[in-house]
Image (tube, rainbow, N blue to C red; front, side, top):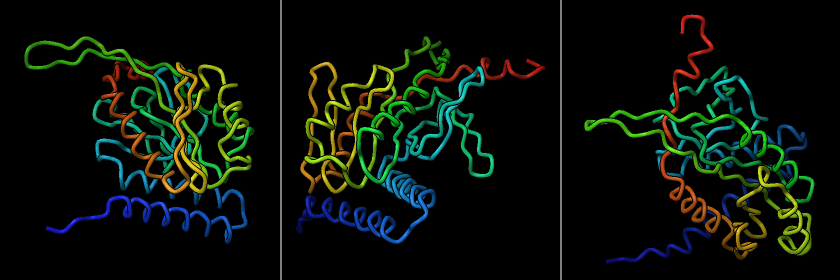
Amino acid sequence: MGKVDIKSLFYSLQSQMITKLSTNRQHISHPGIKGDSSELNWVEWLKTYLPKRYCVDKALIIDCEGNTSDQIDVVIYDQQYSPFVFNQDNAFYIPAESIYAIFEVKQEINKEYVEYAGEKTKSVRSLIRTSAIIPHAGGFYEPKQHKGILSGLLTLSSSWSPPLGDSFEKAIYNLDAESRLDMGCVLEEGAFLVDYEKTRVQKSTKEESLIFFFLKLLIELQKLGTVPAIDIDCYGSSLDSI
C-alpha cells in the first residue's frame, strides 16, 4: 500500500496559488482588472475545495426590507434554506439569512485595508436576518437563532514588518464589534484566526498560510452548522399581491 505526502500536497497548492496571484500582480497594470482577477482566483479556489454544500460568489447582500450591503468580494453562502439568490447579468444578490462568511480581497494587508474590510463587514452584519419555522414529519422545528457571520481579509503580501506583528494586531483590535475580522490569509507571510474573548491571535508559518486558513475556515464553518430557514413571507410582502 502506497502513502501520500499530504503536507507536500498542501504546500504545492499554496505554491500554485502564490504563483497565480503574483503573476497577475506583475503583469496586470490596471488596478480594477488586477483586483477582479485576484477575487476570481479566490472564489474559484474556494469553490473547488470547500464542500459542495457551500456556494461561493462575489455578491451584494440584501435583506427583506430592501437594504443592501457593500459589494463583497467573496461570499460563502447556503442555498438549501435560502432560495432567493438573484443573478442579474452575473451580479449576484444574496439574502442575508444565507450568509456563512464574507471576505475582502486585496493585494496586501495594511491598516487602511483592515479598516476597509471592517466597514464592509459592518454593512453585512447590520442587515436584517429572518428565521422561519421548519415543518418535518413529526411536526415543526421552531425558528433557529442566527449565529455570527464570519469575516476576513485575503491578500498576497503585507505592508507591515513584521507582516503579522504588533501593528497588525493593533489594527485588528481597534475594530468595533460589528466590524471585527475573524480570520484571514496573507499568502506569502502567514494566516491568522482571532479569538476576541481571549485577546489572542493564532498565526501560521508563511509556508502553511493557505492550508492553515483553509482548515481553520472549515472548522469555523462546522461550528456555524446550517443557516436558519428564510422567512419567505417577509420577502414576499414587497409584492402587491401578498
